[in-house]
Image (cartoon, rainbow, N blue to C red; front, side, top):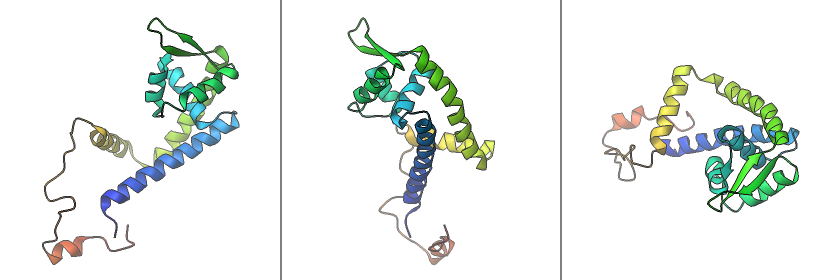
Length: 167
């Protein structure tokens, strides 16, 4: 049987992949890629951003940003300019703002629908757990007795474990 941690990781990947696939479908219907949607959404919610800020906002590698923004600029959905610090800064055009303003609420509605299987309390618990997990300051240190060195001490412990195929 796979460890609980691996099952959690696989479950998280599946959930994110499913949401990304659904968002990509909405974006494609509007003639956008998932990356283009993400850039427009970041600019819509955060205002003008530099390349690095866009990259951080959409969790993307720096190599993909120039391609994505180039396509959006060609389509007249965003503009780029140099700011005082000689950094590229991107802004939505009126057409870009109109497109993401029409598309974003549909995506948000889809996400909310997907999460209706959890109660409000479960959603808050999951959000808190994920924040703690993602805390880079070490708020989630390893617990004693966990990890590779974990040993089984009794058959009662084994009996309490879910059987293969039960999860």
